[in-house]
Length: 386
Ligand SMILES: Cc1cc2nc3c(=O)[nH]c(=O)nc-3n(C[C@H](O)[C@H](O)[C@H](O)COP(=O)(O)OP(=O)(O)OC[C@H]3O[C@@H](n4cnc5c(N)ncnc54)[C@H](O)[C@@H]3O)c2cc1C
Image (cartoon, rainbow, N blue to C red; front, side):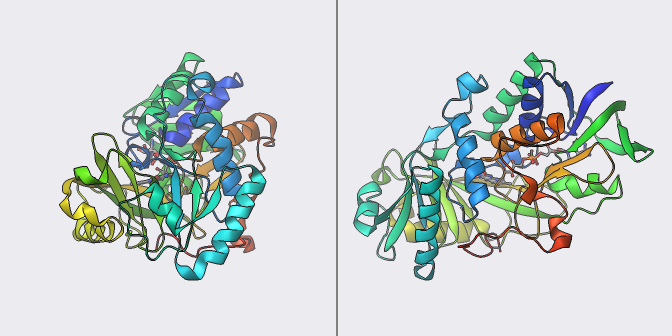
């Protein structure tokens, strides 16, 4: 019998296994494919603290401390690359951005407002005529989501955790209102605690215990372009709400581009993501060339997609729900990679001690949707992914 069964071997299942192991709690991660087969393996890996919700910035900041000190805190590699991070917003959201940067500074996040000339100096190849102010986080960048997950899992295994791959959970056992284990294609596993870390499949796992999780699948495609020489060896990581896209450098002289709009909702998360959807590449090329005109000389390297679970307020669902011993760590809504270290730490505390001291994650409870207590930033930028 295990202490804890974790359903899903993405960055969240692995982070939780690691943090439980640090507390001497043994877990078994059951993964229907291979480690990082879901959203994690396709994640763009942006690591920044710029959010319009204070709690999210706090969790990102706590997680950031892991990314910059990975070897000592976890071991192995996370591939963190510091590029500096720029946030661009449309002119009518400048005041929101000012307020958000002030909030980030209060938390301790290195973030400042810079003007058009500063952006031009940081990124000489960007078109900046439409940028009056930008938020700049000099320490931020991106990490390698696969390496991050793998090293979390390796560190967890060194301390007694188990990973079972090609293992699909088909049923959750409940007896007298308590979970007692799961059935899988590789037999039954028993535990008093079961955690749903199943990403875009988490609503299906919820149904196994008659729990409705308000989650829809969110498909997100990304494109890699080979940068022309004149753009230089690197550039900052950027979220560009003006052109509804983000982009960052990738190794090998590539730039990764993702779009904030037209991410299909409700598709089967098991559908093929080896290729981007029709029309995505044309739209992505058009936008990156508007912001970085020299990219006209670049060439397409490849494009693919992934699925995450999206909630009604586009924030995670964390905590106990349903039968005793059942926990949710899902609904990451396209932003869960950078938060995974802190969320894993919080969830491990919640499971071990009944409360999370690391950060108060109670605002992320499932019941907020019924209570009408959605997570919306005080100076919010509106729906991000629509
Ligand atoms: C293309 C893309 C780009 C992204 N970019 C960023 C970014 O730049 N920054 C950021 O912070 N976030 C980003 N995200 C979001 C982030 O990657 C996800 O929020 C995060 O990886 C989710 O991790 P997870 O462990 O919750 O889910 P997943 O990685 O999806 O893991 C869930 C796992 O559960 C398994 N599973 C499902 N059902 C079962 C079952 N019945 N039995 C056993 N196993 C099961 C799946 O196979 C899967 O491996 C991006 C997402 C995508 C798709």
